[in-house]
Length: 166
Image (cartoon, rainbow, N blue to C red; front, side, top):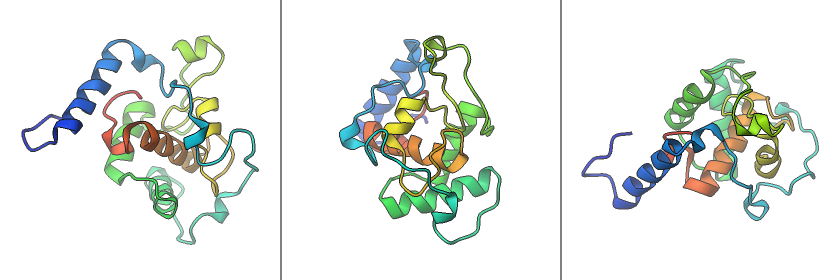
């Protein structure tokens, strides 16, 4: 996102801050900030497997567009901010839309916790930010999107505010 004169100062600072982190090689550590269980959708380790069938009733295609739309419906119901554009932009940067993408080279992978899925989430972050009503599976597309959006909302205010690895 290009910084413009109409963009609020805090948004410009957030953009520069996130870009600075990426420049300092933190980009390789996707979603590595220690999760804050106090802000998680549910406590770590207590989520039971839940089928995506429990999600809102609207039928969504089993493709990237459908996964984003299903995630947005869940996010809206749970009060998690984000837009189609913000999710799509970050998904394309992180995984090119491949729900089975896995980073095998960054510091997380070297430490045995590779980033996985559409938004390249690590397991501890997924567990801390998992959204009730989605599958308890890191690579499930809708669960991955909603957990990442929940994390981004906690750390950056919204997935829409993320313009680089986070």
